[in-house]
Length: 185
Image: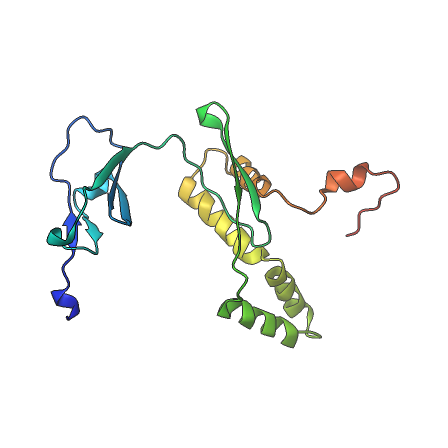
């Protein structure tokens, strides 16, 4: 059958009573789950790949409410993060990210560009350094997060984001606190 002939189901909320404005509607139909904030579900339906006549079991409908919210800027070379939700009595969430082992086309292109740029001038060397450590993309993401969050203290917000990545590398304090250690520039 053509794409137009494939039956699908849409769920749109046409009224609600007593549901908090920050609630999230979650609907499961078979193996497919769709979620959306109540404020948007009145105008944008949840879409499911089954037609009304194909649904063979009851829908599972949940109303969820956020406990806390935080933004996290991912560091390209870190996989452990600790997110603190200070406004909710000190809740803490630890997360481990698992990157894909396959190289993306962008990564392959970046590695090729880095190999070709050896021996070039200082500007190319600086660019390679930023790309190698993922600094440019990370700082751009960090600034984007600051612009979106508009925190009252953007510097504290950035420090919180920078410290969320639990680095496997020794910190400056670890290096300086060791007797006889030297910090290389």
